[in-house]
Length: 254
Image (cartoon, rainbow, N blue to C red; front, side, top):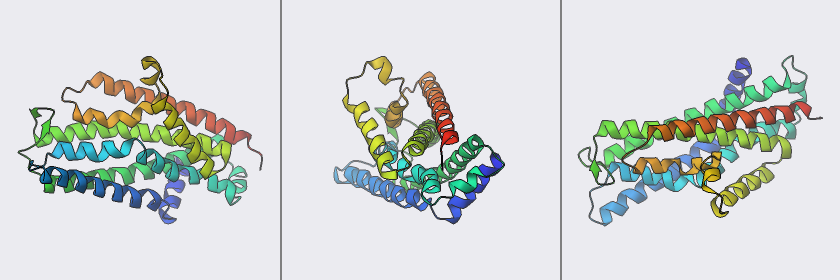
């Protein structure tokens, strides 16, 4: 399985598939950083490091990040059916379940690499644009080190959410074998989650709660138990989606 994951990672890098994630994500982050920076400059306010970081990721996490996750993950499995290479995979000595999980792990490793690279780049850029003496969360001043620790902790949970969402996309892609239909289903699920008046206990325990995870950056008193809870939720849902997806993949006829 790990060998398949390594092969899939190398294949994605060679094919430049990660550009579908890297380029639009870079532009979204850069535009958002500049928008929130000049928003404070034009309001005669000293640029706040945390305000810019929070705004940059929070404004993109509701729709743009999920869309990019779908655009990135869906073709990984769909193209195997589209170009009939799935026949070669099925003739492998590896089981179909191993192939499916290996491909997902490989795609996830590339995703994490790209996302973390852009996260670090964004933090460095915002650090140059702002003063380390002017960092606030709510009305409380925090140090630069505290700000970095907070961003890292929240980003780890956010990555778990996006990997979880990627596992959902992978599962739907195996069912539909269509990138357009997969994107439609993901957007429909997101819309239903944000529009339907779900009971709070359901809303807070669905994996889609992850689209609001960056709100934690703006809260001074972060509850670590909440972060652990969401990490656990995302991992459980990802395991379910991967399990269902690999089962369906194993039953596919080509």
